Structures are given as C-alpha cells and as structure tokens.
Length: 415
Image (cartoon, rainbow, N blue to C red; front, top):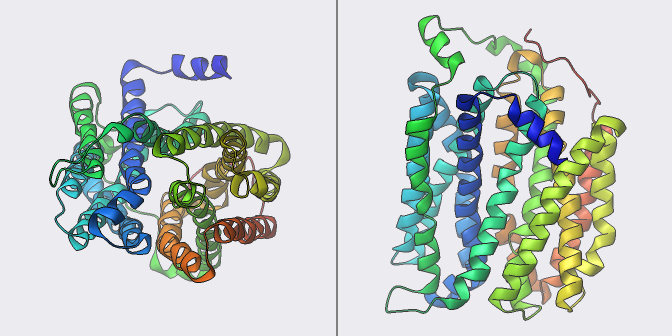
C-alpha cells in the first residue's frame, strides 16, 4: 500500500502536489473543528447547566446549514476562482470556530455553529474542484479516496487533542476547558498562508474564465434525472445516518454510560478512527473485485456482528477492538461511495449530482444526534439506542445498495 501511495504522489508536479495537500488539509481541519464539538458535549452541557439533548442541537445546526455553504461558496468559486474562495472558506470556518469559544449562551453557540456549518458545507466542494481540476487523470480514483479520508483524519486529530489536551485544561472564570478546545480549533487559519504561497489557481477555471463553458444541464431534463437523483439522496441519507449514528454521540456514550474518563475516551476514539481509515481504503479497494454494491452490502452487514464488542462490553481493551471493527465496517462502506456515486450519476450532471445528494442526505439526518439523545432519555439509556441505530441503518444501507444499479468502471466522459 505504501509503495502505491508513493507511486501516485511521484507522478505529480510540485504545484499539483501542493494543491492536493492544501485541499486534503482543508477538509481534514474542517472535520477536526466539527468533531471537537462532539467530544465536548458533556462539558458544554455542564457549563450551561442543560441536558446533552439541548447541546446536541448545535450539531443539528451545523449539519443543516451545510447545503447553504455548498451553494454559496460554490457560486463564489465559479465566479472568482477556486483558490481565493478556498482561502476565504478556511478563514471563515476558523473564525466561526473561534467565535464559538466566546459564545456567552447556548443560543449564541448554536448561531456560531450554524455559521460554521455554512463554511464547512462549502469546503469540500471548492477543495475537490481545485484538486481534481489540477491533478492529472491518472490516479484520480486514488486521490478521490484519499481526499475523502480527510474527514476521518479530522476526527482522529480531534480525538488525539481531546485525549492529550482536554484532561489537563482547567477553568479560569469564563475560560472553561471546552472553550480552550475551540480556540485550538482556530489554528487551521494558518493554512491560508500555504494556499496563498504554494497553490496555483485551477487551470480549468483559468481557461474557462476566458471562454466560459455553459452548463449542459437544462431544466427540461429534470423529469428524466429525478428518479436517479432521488435514489442517490435516499442512499446518502442512509449513509449519513450510518456514520453520524455511530459516531456523534459515541464519546458521550462512553463517558456517561461506560464511565470512561476523558483520556480513555480519546484513546478509544483514536483506535476507532484508525479502523475507519483502514476500512475506507480496504473496502474501497475490494470493490474493484466484488463490485460497488456487493462491497457496500458486505461492509454494512458486517457492522451488525460488531455491536456486542462496540456497545455492550465494559473492558477498555475490548471496547477499543469493538470501536476499531465498527468503524472499519462503517467507513469501509463509505469508502466505496465517491466512485459509486460518480458512476451512478448521469454524465451531463455528474458535477452536481454527487455533492448535492450528499449534502441533502446530511440535511435530512441533521437531527440525528438530537433524535438519539431524546430516545435515550425516553427509554432509559443510550446502549439500546446506539445498538439499535446500527442494526436498522445497516440493513437499510445494505438494502438500498443491493437494489441500486452497478456501474463499476463506467467511463467518465461528458455527454
């Protein structure tokens, strides 16, 4: 695997490599800033003297505003270029992360997280456009999968900071431990200097500025594309429920239900994210032999037997194994998605379908954490809710994937 990664990077020029690194780091640090909140839910709830359910509303506002960011920053990137828009995007999510640290009330924190959601929603689309309009066609699939894993790397980084830093933070007046975590989340703004100095504008955008290419999509085609688009939205709704349902409240579950300390939760989360990283790469590679649908079905169904280790054990070592295996399967299924969505999308709207379906799926499941917290409060515990979520959603993901079409190896040409 290491030799394959090295080979793919060796084919790039310095400017191409810098563009990809900048976009990968942008997505990683964006995810890092998002996941900091998931690790600090209990601390924030205690500071504002409210329940976990109310603080989890912040996650809802972040996820709900991501489609707005995708449209806003996407339009800016089309008009003013990928590079300056990405720089503005990075500054935006760093500023709103820092503003979250100074929120005087829970209501203001929700406002800050909603604004952060707009910035987060724009980063993936703008970064991907800059990266893939700069990279050569050879190795595009590898770089697509690696770029997607930036989300997992961001979670891993957040877990590491929570493990190594959070237990040593002490409150001084308004400067509570969770606020310091959000201040740390503002450091990604430094990435702007690297983008400014080391990254060139997308060659495709520069050429298009002189000779704009009109979109191929026409509103008269909506009827023909609608069934495919609705299926992709449904599929991505199931997938986002699969990932968020097994991740967002898991640190709180480990603290409140299992009784693990913050440092222990951080260690478990790191191991789980390593499982996610390996799972995405391994199952994505396996899909080249099995096909996209079979690989997704296999990974989704194998998540169910991991539930006892993941949710019902109390030994830290066993929980670590369960977390690794659970996220290996969840993110393993996700590892197939970038290729599968692009292969299923009509060629004339391939640039629109995957991203829009993904963001709408996120929007539909944006109240996932709030819903899970409410169910846990009603039924007397988070264990059955966490386990039940995985069972139900894994079956839905497998069913939808099996019912869909297989277009592995579809030639990526415009109509």
